[in-house]
Length: 156
Image (cartoon, rainbow, N blue to C red):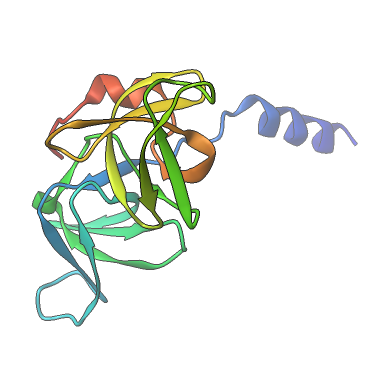
């Protein structure tokens, strides 16, 4: 009984590891079936597409996306720039951080965007060239908090 309580206490006291998120820094990057350029390209991802780091092998990084697809990408094609991908059919990008603001733009599913700022549950997003507006976090996957904004565009 004491062992069970001790193990439970240790499990509760140990914080869950936060996912190591990166984003694609190139205009387009190949995601491969294994850690090397000789492996088959299984899919491609565009700039600012967020990826969860799962493993590393040399200069290659095993990554996963919001659909639990996995593959390998060359590490120089990744950045710490905070980014999200739209996971709903459409998402309203508003002129300010809230439902009371007008819709400035409508994003389609799988549109990936760089996160510039965060206010509550709202992300200020950019396509890399201009600020587009504000997006609610519930329609996205990837970026998860202010600490990532401080890392900004640092290279991997």
